[in-house]
Length: 146
Image (cartoon, rainbow, N blue to C red; front, side):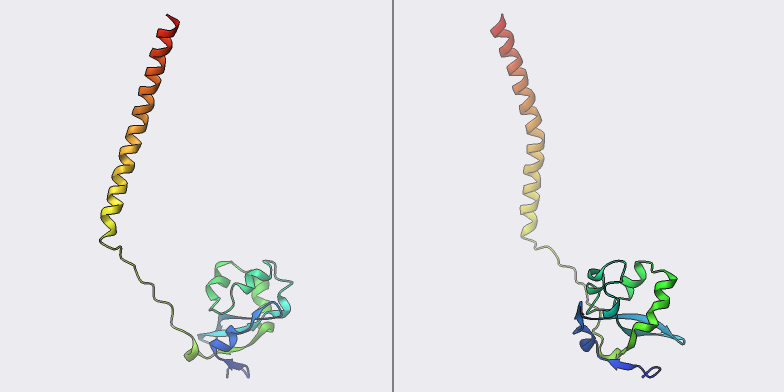
C-alpha cells in the first residue's frame, strides 16, 4: 500500500460506474514512478464543469489519457488528492486491446471493381444524355415555332 491507501483490483474499480458511486483510474506520479490511482469522484459529479456524463464515460478503463487530453487547470489538479482513495493493483489491469487489421476478402474485390466501373460509366453517361436531351428540346422548340 502506498501512503496507507487501499489497493483495488481493476475489476473492483470498474464496478463503481454510476452517478452515486463513480470511481476513476488516473495515473499519478508518486515519487519517481507512475501508479494507476483510484479516485472516488462521486461527491464531485455535480460540480464537474464538463458534467457528470464526461466522468461516467471514463469509468471502467484507464482514464489517464482522457484526463490529460482535456487540459485540466492547475486548480483541478490540486483538487485531485482529496478524491484519491487508493491505487490499482497493476497485475489486475487488462492488457491493452490488440488492434488487428481485417483484410478484405479476395472475392469481394471484383465486385467492388465492377461497381466502380459502373459508377464511372454512369458519371460519364449522365451528362452526355442530358446534353443530348437539351439539344433535342432546343431543336424541337425551333421547329415548333417555325
